[in-house]
Amino acid sequence: MPHLEERRTEMYRLAAKVLGSAENAEDWMRHPALGLNGQVPAELIGTAEGVELVETLLMQIEYGVYV
Image 1 (cartoon, rainbow, N blue to C red):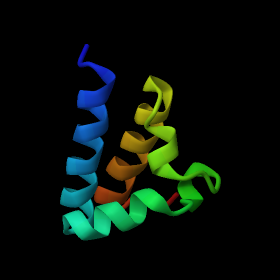
Image 2 (image 1 turned 180 degrees about the horizontal axis):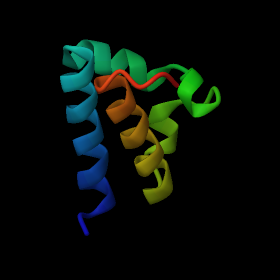
Image 3 (image 1 turned 180 degrees about the vertical axis):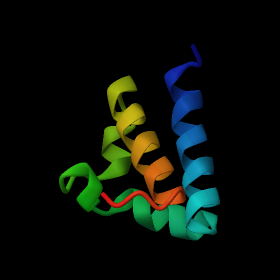
Image 4 (image 1 turned 90 degrees about the vertical axis):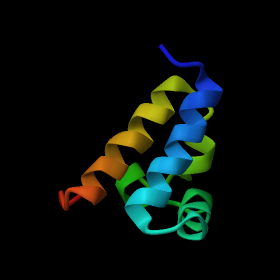
């Protein structure tokens, strides 16, 4: 299992891919997300559980799953 810091970095890369740019990813990570019940993605990715939640939401966004 990858180290938590590596997973955090992966989440930023995934967000940049899904959202179109690193700038969009940074912005998205700093603001409350409706799909995360108003929680801030950057705050959630401090835990393994939070990384999973953020990753799931990003995958839902990428594949057009309504959240």
